[in-house]
Image 1 (cartoon, one colour):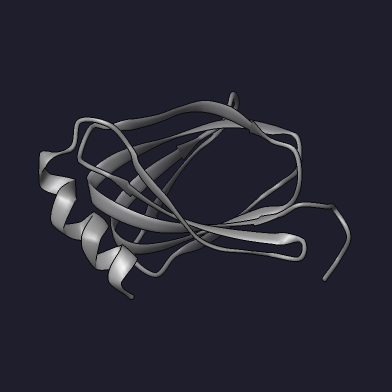
Image 2 (cartoon, one colour):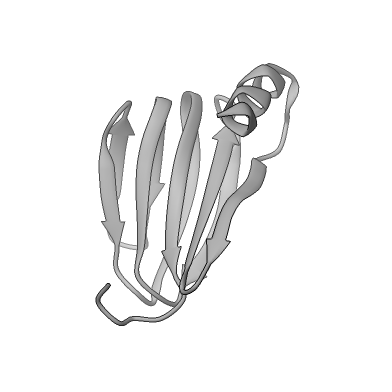
Length: 105
């Protein structure tokens, strides 16, 4: 996938999250996000079901009460209405699948 390659090539120079949408149909959106080591995706609120899938590197997924270390090929279901932030531990690329409604697919 060229979009993931583009983010991978740009990651070493970026001081902010790299985010590109690669799919948006019906009730689903797929984003690819790149985080250089130490770069944070600031706290935000997921209002519907979402899933993170790590493609490369490592990230810390943080909520008010927990922190999860996710490595290459790990996935994590984000519950609706969860405030969270994500930090790159090692240069990381991950996919974020968002469902626009809380209906089960």
